Image (cartoon, rainbow, N blue to C red; front, side, top):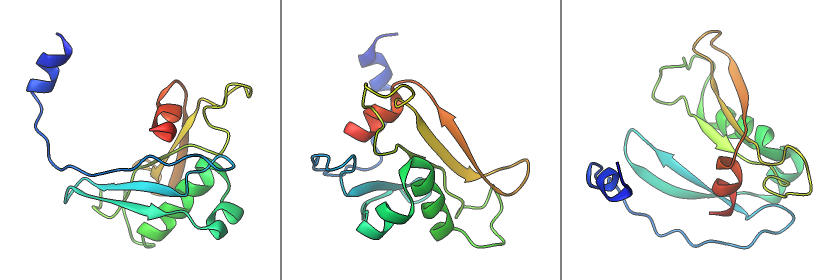
Length: 129
């Protein structure tokens, strides 16, 4: 199946004008938030306080999950989020393992927050997009 055939089978749910920003100390200063239930797309500012206290993809992911859920949130509740993030050295080829991204959510098995490392190109592509 070629790319055009794949594209023809999908429909666009929402457009969002996203202006790419330069990296400063490994960060762009904003994240993209997509609500799959409502198709809402918005940008969230990454504050200096967040960069200082919650370093890296795991820290950012856990902070965003903490802000999104409450103690009674279950893994299959609509307010549970799946957060995919990359750290400040993500995608920098001088550091082994820097191509990873992290996925943070509430586990369906244990009901508590979990994180998982994902290797490959997705993390750097997400960060530099």
